[in-house]
Image (cartoon, rainbow over all chains, first blue to last red; front, side):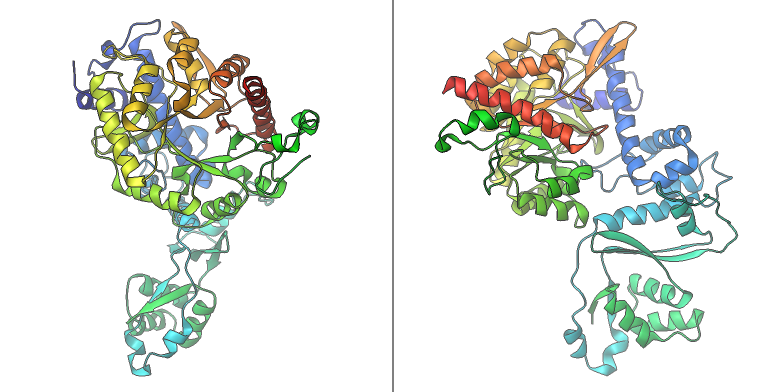
Length: 256
Length: 303
């Protein structure tokens, strides 16, 4: 008799990798064939994880259609198996998968749309954070300002696309009343995805703000972030930008 | 309708009967419903007459946002139980420390009335299948489960309940009936049993055992919670299987089996589970009221 470990390894190989391990012959004969019984578990696995992906990627689902999404999800489950008993992290690799997925060549924007949906998902579940402690900031000696490393709210993400991904996302919401037509050449988006109260919101950023926040996100100090913003937007007012981001709780903490 | 401040109320169906009894005989409702995200606002606004709510623990493992916000608000009005679906208790991989840590944090946050997990495994060699897979029922598996439940209970510093699952296969290596396996598990690990009456019915039909043998095989004092749910009959060329789909009302046969269970497992909290094709909250509450009526009748009969 195989050990419990051996049984579980054989079961996984046969049910989820389609390898013949004889598990079907180690089941009690009782009506249905062993293969049929194992197939129930094989199907359940794919359908429940497809459902999990559909919940995170409703716009991708709508863009590619039910049949193609199921095909995509089956491939995803094999290429990026779940590693965890809770599914919060499951689906993270969908943007890279769709970026080079056969059959999606005509939809060059799907990777960025998927990135937007994954950002939404992460922001939806991310931690709360108190506003930046302005009194603590005031206690810092001005000569050291340039060394400060500011951090963004945990429930915020940045996204840059050469496609109008926000318009594509909005046009594919169930309650969108528009005609669903998006001009793909209407320009790209730089986006801040952020949760305010309980709602996930999108804000369009200009070049300077996006460069500034991207630098903060990358762990750069205030001077480096300011320079990055000024390099792409000559009239960038870093003092005003920082005050605005602190007031709107985009920037919520700092370290020296 | 009588309502007290503890979130317990007397259902409309029982109103006349209860009104004739002494006030001292009022009992908190024991029937609850599974809480799903689609019903957060309805539960907060309607305060439905159910005794408690149950959530899937893993849905609240995120760091913040809407799920935890609504769980906190609803917990202020109702007792809540935590039902785990992803711990993979029966796996031969080590238990996930991250999973246990998340579960413990959630337990500390919402002080659940009950914590439950499944008699199942779901992962091996680092891969997770996010399903409830049956174990063989033999001495090695029993010893393994006793140790694993011990680890969880030591970590949480609380006893947990273990639920029987719907299964679609039986291993030839099994030499103990499931109900004996569960009973022995409870005796040796100190856990309680979450008896899913729908799962008893589904597995009995799928494997050809007598559901009454199952009920008779479980000692009443071990059962801390009962589950009821809807299932689907799936027909194949070579026969049929009942599938535990949680997408419809409790079947007449399962209600009947629950009547038997309620006579044996007296006044045990009972829960309506519904996970797919979720209906309006009223439908779940109505199902819970049916369960409450049966529970109250059997409780009164025994008293």
